[in-house]
Image (cartoon, rainbow, N blue to C red; front, top):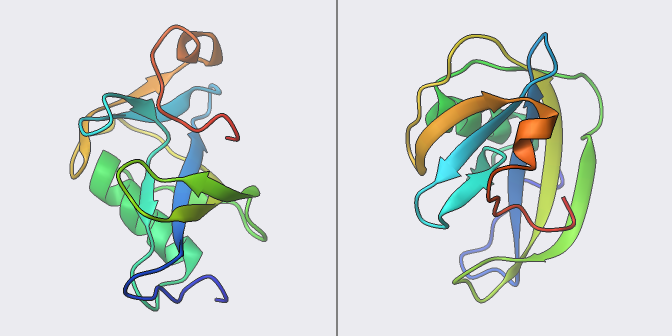
Length: 131
C-alpha cells in the first residue's frame, strides 16, 4: 500500500481509525485515557503495514473485537490533522466496518462501548473536527 511507509521522524504520520457500527446502527467508541475523551478506535500504522491490516490490528488491541471491514477504498481520507504532543501532522485513513459483541478495552483505551448516534453527542469527544 502507498500509505504503508513510516519514516523514523516523519513530517506526516499515517494513522487509521475505524468507523465501526453494529447491526442496530450503534457506533463503537473508546475512551482514550491519554487524551481524556471518547473517540473512534485506531492508531498509527507500523512500518510496512497496509492500512486495512493496521486498522484491524488497532481495533483488536483497543476493543478486543474482530471487525469485518467493508471492501474497497477507505471510507474517507483526512489530510493534515495535528497530532497532540507531536511535531507532525497526520493523514488519517478512515475505514468502515461492522462488529458485534461486547467490546473489551485495551492498549490506549480505558473503556470501549457501543453508542447510539444521539448518545455520541452527549459525551466529550477528542475526534478532530474534520472527522
